[in-house]
Image (cartoon, rainbow, N blue to C red):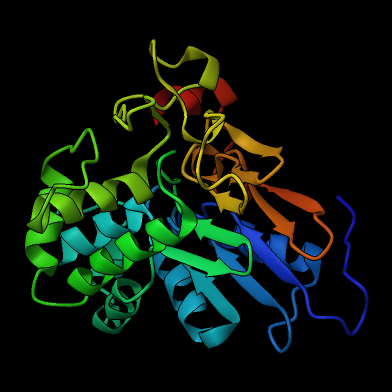
Length: 290
């Protein structure tokens, strides 16, 4: 792939798909677009860690960029937090071991814990997985702030327990307390398909046309209330790089040996880098394993 840069001297904003610890691929992709940390900005769709071999390097890199990087939390980032705080059992030799034993792991994970779940600028929305069709962007942002406050406060551990150990299938505005927060958290970080009433299918990760009866991709409902915004998300590797008006999906399966994708907001140009951190797997293979 040719090295391509934006107009010289102009700031560029790049949205990057799920990195999953693929640090070498990430750095190569940044070389392709000639990312300039002194003036350009990166938006990361979450899942910085896990699966790939270099989660620690990715976290350190992201943290050092300061306000040049906007990153939302993904489900694998939450998995790392749950491991560190004892919510999930820690097994040695897993891909996150290097993070958990690093001398600076406390500082890195506090930084990760403080990331938002949604980022909105003008009509553009960054989220890891997606929104329920019945949520407007403003409603989703308000709900995300409820969860962010809990993640940064005294409800952090109970919320991780509830979200990691139980699946909350359907949102209901009458929910209160930890169940309410866990349901919101799972929508924002795990949704792929749902019903018209907002019931999630947590077990499905395949191709959209293979979704269970009555389930559609969350963005496919014609009366979706966030349809006036442009949403950028990852999480769905089987979907791959997918673009339609108002929707850009950027998980190209880098964690499974696929590629890492990026889109430049100023002109909509997209780039991909083949995985440089692990051998490639057939696309159908990694889709089946998600």
